[in-house]
Each structure stands twice: as structure tokens, then as C-alpha cells.
Length: 448
View 1 (cartoon, one colour):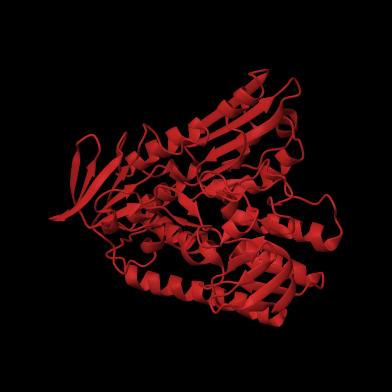
View 2 (spheres, helix red, strand yellow):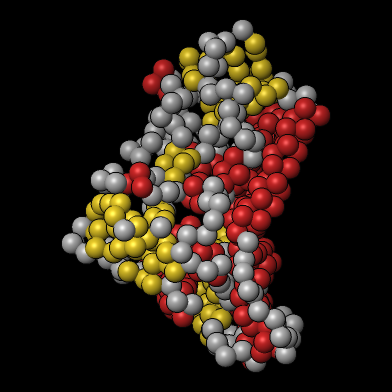
């Protein structure tokens, strides 16, 4: 039996951040990971997705170039060359993570892990590891619907395995993953249909975001099919997607499921512990990331709370600061976490939507300031997509509790406004800030 101060289950961003911070405090640490280091984000998530988004942005820029006097056209696009370059970049990152563990003398076990008891872990060979503290950071995986022919489809993981661009694509889902991949496919040349269960996408975001993004996607030529719950997939002349209300959509070369994610908890042997799960299989934790078993913690997507890479990293580091660094009250606040949707144009959002603010504050002095405008970039182009912005304030002092941006640069500008909102900025603080002109971000300090 090997004994450690900290055992980390999962070599994704959160698990690695926790392990490396623990080592800085002198803790004997081991990480269990059977797959590629870096987890979902590095290998089949935000990192390769951003590379694909960059490629899509270049495709849009080529379309716009003629309006700025450039005589250029995109004759062809080499999807396979893009994949090879992207995969090489991702592999370098994974190798870097392994080197970091080696350089910091953090042990790595290339095996799945199962609990034997609340402080003992088995590897695949039956070896036992005892840990004074154990962190569950096993992340999640994309869900596949339980319908006939579902195996004909792929998930977001399979998207990164594609070696050629499919001419016609059906994407099923209404969240940000569905929307982002639809944008990439369309920009690089696919005909795209997006199927959603309800009448709009991005239902957990501010309504302004949902409305503006759907309008942008339709203007780009993406077909939006609403109130469409998948019923079956068949292979005929291409793939045929049928919905439960009897509609049939034919001729797809790719059906992609983007219907949500599930936690990697099923094979951890949690039934041998006191660790409690919710009805969806997520690990229940308190604000300190404690599970119901003493000395066992959970961070990241496996908790089902704010499934974002920086959240997992921040939660892991703060947890270790508390456990090994003597910072007794150190924990992550899950309020005012900024996020970005890499659509075309991108979305940046932080804080409460207008609807949630009115529900939470009982509509008491909740105000929303809005702005829509054509960004200067499109002054010369034929297409005139709108930027949309909203500030949500509460109280007589008009403290800003929500900031939502759809438009070019939203992905970069939201970080700074997240700092301001986290510090308690008021609308008058925005008003008193001199605008940077000509930019899109200046609208956020000019709203009346």
C-alpha cells in the first residue's frame, strides 16, 4: 500500500491545479488519470474548440475583405490540415502537463480509480493507495439520447475526430456547445440545421443573448428547427433524423448530439463510501467543496456547478489552500463568474440575467439598460449584424448585478467588467468612466 497526503482522481484542469498547489505546500501527491492529461478542456473542449473558432473567424474575415478593398477569395479550405495542426498543438499541451508533474515530483497513475473505502483507492491492478485527503475531479462526458439509431450520431468528442468536413450537418441541442459547433461548421462550408426542444436556444442566459444569437445564426444561413425532440436516426440516403412529433429530416452526413453532459461518477465505487450524489449522479458538495464523507472533496464538472475550466481550477486551488495552507475560510464564491460563448459574433456574460434579477430581488428597483448598434467594423460591409449590450442594476444606488454583451470583442471585454461587478460597481461608476473611442466596449459606459 502506498500512502499520500493527497490523492487526486482526474488529470483535468481542476485536478492538476489542485495537485500542483498541494505540492507547493509540501504534500505528497498522486494523480490518477487513464486518459490524456488536461481533461475535456485541453483535449476535446475549449482549447481545440477555440482553434476551430479562430478558423471560422478567418473565413468570415475573408468574406468581408472585399469590402475593404482586398481582392481575395477562399477557394478551398483544408479541414484535414487544420485538424493536424490543432491536434499537434493539443498533444504538446498534454505533454507539457506530464512534464510539469514529473518536474514537481507528483506521482501519476495511468489507471482508472475506485474507492475501497472513503480514504483508500484501488487501481486497475488491485494496488491500494491510502490518502489523508482525496479530491474527486473526474469531470463529465457528453450524453447520447436513448433513441433508436442514436449510435449513428457523434458527440462533441467525435467532432474533433472528423477528418473531413461533412456537407450537411444536423446538430441536436440548444446550449452553447451546439451553437458554437454549428457556427464552425457553417463558416467552413457545411449546410447546418440546428434542432432544439423548445422555441429558443440558450434558455439559461439573458433573453437578449438568446434573441440576438438566434437572429445572427439565421442571418448566416443556419436553419433553426424549434420544438424538435429527436425520436430516431436511420441510415438511408444519408442519415435521416426523425422528431417525436412525426417530422423527418433527410440527407445528413453527420448528426451531432449536443444535449448536455453527465458526470463521471458511475465507475468510482462510491457505493463503498458515504459520498452522496444527487438524482443526476453529480457529487454533492458544500461551499468548501466538502462531500458528505470526511476528508473527501469534489471540484469541477463532476459537481454539476458552473461547469467551466477556470471554475474547476479556482475551486481546486482554494480547496488546497484551506486543507494544506492553513487558510481556514478559503473557498470559491460562485457569484459573478464570467463566461464566454464562442459564437459569431461572440457572447460575454457575467452576473444575473434581467429575469433572474427580477425574481431574486422581487422586482424591487431592478433596472435594465440596453443598447443595440452596428459595430464600426461593419460600416463598409453589406451585412450589418448588430452588437447588443445590457446592464442589469438593482437598488437606488443601481449596483450592477449583470452585464451581457453580444458582439465582436465581447469575449475579451467581459473579463474587465467582471472585475468591476465583483467589486460592487454601480451604474454611476460606469457613467463616470471616460469612454475609449471608437470601440464597441464604450457603449457600456455610455448607456442612458
